[in-house]
Length: 175
Image (tube, rainbow, N blue to C red; front, top):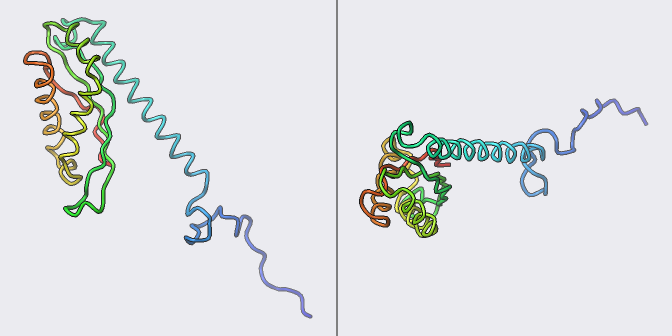
């Protein structure tokens, strides 16, 4: 029998570390370390945004109304929604928004306390506003301003006139 003259397989060949594996064979279509890297980057991004928002809120409270433009900000956190991509609703996309509320000069302490008492109701109202949108609508250039306006109107309805001056969306991410 003649000697095998076929070239040797490349290092790592057939181990799942190379090109995407065909579906159905139980292997991932990407290197396993890639998932870890993506999750780590997402965690870092979330931490940075949280720190920046916390810094904004603390700076506003520490500097007082004179340096903060007469507005104190309260972070309401991130709100998540799954929005339909088309009219059938069979396809949907993930949407994440972070909301910070700018309070007026009057009754700040009372308004901040009221926000904390009804925080879940406020977050539910914001999510209801988001769920009225579709994915193509939130990707339009004027959408962020429209969504912030709708949230502002809802908050004024919940908290009363003169309590909320503005709504800021530091994170507005249709995925």
